[in-house]
Amino acid sequence: MLRISNLKCPLDFAEQNLPRLVAQTLNCKEDFASFRIVKKAIDARSKADVHYVYGVEIEAADEDALLSSTPYPFAEKVKPTETYCLPRRNVCLRPVIVGSGPAGMLAGIALAEAGLKPVILERGRPVPERQKDVRNFWNGGALKENSNVQFGEGGAGTFSDGKLMSGIKKDRYTSKVLTELTAAGAPEEIMYLAKPHIGTDKLALVVQNIRKKIVSLGGEYRFGHRADDLIVRDGILQGLKVCGADGEIYELAADRVILAVGHSARDTFEMLYRRGVLMEPKPFSVGARIEHPQSLINRSQYGVFASRLGAADYKLAFHGKAGRSAYTFCMCPGGVVVAAASEKGRVVTNGMSEYARAGENANAALLVGVNPEDFEGTHPLRGMYWQRQLEEKAFLAGGRSYKAPAQLVGDFLKDRASSKGGEVEPSYRPGVVYGSLNEVLPPFVTETMRAGIIEMDRRLRGFASYDAVLTGVETRSSSPVRICRGENLQSSVSGLYPCGEGAGFAGGIMSAAADGLKCAEKLVESLA
Image (tube, rainbow, N blue to C red; front, side):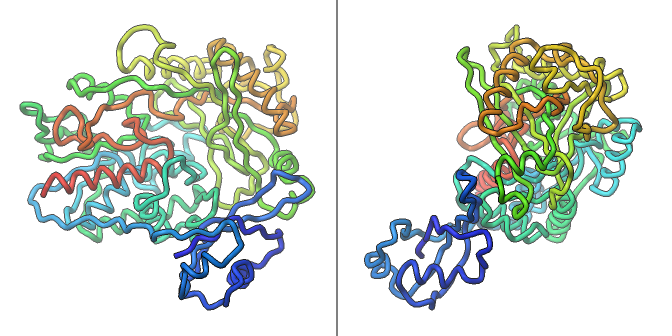
């Protein structure tokens, strides 16, 4: 097939006219055997000329002749993406997946399609019950440590913007992820948008539909069941000790376990360390959520075209002279800042948007990278313990009620505490307590954030607005640990497959889901 890229179209262009545009561009007839959009993006680099850019793939009668005769420079011959398909296996012992986030769900689909009937252990609750627990916490109720923004069906991604952008290569794994998500109810546009997102409202339905598919293929979900220990003999996995929903401990035989626990399963990391599973500290980032009016972001990004396009996003970075960097992450247009704690006595923030992105505010994590060398000692979990310290400081600064410490950007830049809010109403619930983020974050983080905000304002006018709000702390951007694994994707304990974001091999929904497919593939290969 042929891929035709960089097709520039005005904002009022009708997509059904794309085949005609391609035929005119290639100077050929509009009789393609197949035609599909593979990319759609907004080019807003020139505020006087904001337009769409499309990429398409076509099948034509004589592609070589067409390619050699066209003067269009952005046409090339490509091979169709290979299909992800695992051979079926017939074994007695069912594989176990720990965690039902993106990595666990896609591994579950792959294993179920291979006939292996996986058992999925999820410490949290199904989506409907989980939503009730989370809303109750946001409204001032008690935190449930196994049912919150981090834990439960769908993992942390269920309460997010559902962004699917990723730096990983597009291949059969990413194609499989997008295909399964759309089959489960995600918008079909995620297949080709340059910046696809699902939205937390649609994700809640998608993850339930994925569960239904896995169960229909013979898989089993066990909600409220937490993997508490490994059963190992001579370095080979024999099974798990599991705490059931009733609090009773039982043994589950399994010689193949995909460990997809997410970046917040700190008790699991400690258990693995006690069991001698090899792991190492890895870099991660900390900071706060920064919140602006969405209208400000729209005007800054789209100029006079702002009213004709949806909620704008941004991605900014700053590289300081001292080697420290600040960057924005997980930007949520028209979204809210959410309480994302999973441990009592600690405050954590995250961002969330619904599909429509129709909220009044925009928010993003404003983060500073940290390295294992920044923490004292040699313990592989020292970064995790440092995260906990920051979250405990945030809890104290917020008045010990899960309110979050907040500071106006103008006051933050002047290094003085805020006593009250301004024009931007913080969206975080159960509420904020104004003060100084210096009480929570170390100087090397706040100093880098200040320099970053000033530099970012030069590229996105209004980013340093006085009344913009910083809400802390954001500590769970990625896992602070990597569980070592070999080429067969097994850990130092044979049969244990560390997987996804929690294991340190992914950084978002797409990459975590793709890693789940890779681990499932290696597991099936090991049964040959």
